[in-house]
Length: 295
Image (tube, rainbow, N blue to C red):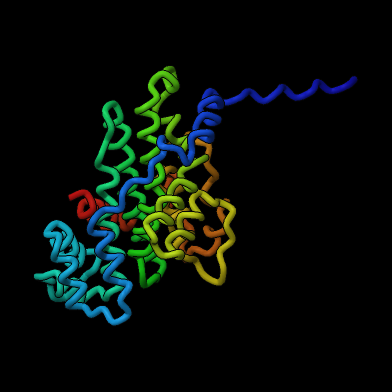
C-alpha cells in the first residue's frame, strides 16, 4: 500500500507580512537611524592614530552621562579594581583606548532602544530589557572563559539587536497589516529573518569597524564552527541561547548542547532550565552589569 503523501506545510500566519517587509526594505519605511552624536564624535576622534588618553577623555567628558557611566562601569564589581576611578580620564587610563571606546559605544547604543513610536512602547521596553540582558551575559561569559576583551562581546550583542528597532517601528506604522497577530511573536519572527541585514546596513552607514560588522553577521548562526578558540561571536550566540532558554523555553531554537561552540566551553554543565551553569554561578555579575547599563 502506498504511503500517504506528507501533509503540505502550512504557511506561517505572518507569511504575507514577510513578503511586505522584504519589498519595503531599503525604502523610507526602514530609514537608517541617525548615529548618536557622541558615537559620531568618538568615530572622528579615534581616526587619529596619535590619539592620547587625555584627548579621548575630553571627548568622553563632553557628555556628562557617558562620563559618569564609564566611571560606574570601571568601579563595578565585575572589574574588581583595587583603586576606584574618580574621573573619565581615570576610567580611560584603566581601560585603555580600545576598551574605553567600546564601552562608550555600548552607552550610546542604549539610546537606540529608548525612542518608542506610539503604540510600540511595550515592545521597545521588552526589547531593551532583552538587549541589555544579552549584552551583560555575553560579557560575563567571555570573561568566564578567559577572554581579555569582554566589552567586545557586550558591544557586539547590542549591535546585533539594533536592527530590531526599525522592525518595531514598522509594526507600529502598519497596524492594519499586523492586526490579529501577537506582536511579540511577530517581532521575533521578523527579527530572525531581517534584523541581521538591517543591523549591517546601519553599521555600514555609521562607518563602524568591519570587525564589529562581522560580529553582527554571525547573529543566530547556530552551526558556526569555532576556530582554535571561542571568539566573541561564539560567546554572543551561546549567551543568546542561555537567555532564551530561561525566558522562552518553548521557542523553536536549538538545544544549547547542539552548538559546535558548546563543545569548546571549559565547563559544559547545564542547569535544570538547560542554561549554562557557569553563568548561573555568575548571576550577580550579570545583574550588576545590567543595572549599570540600565541607568
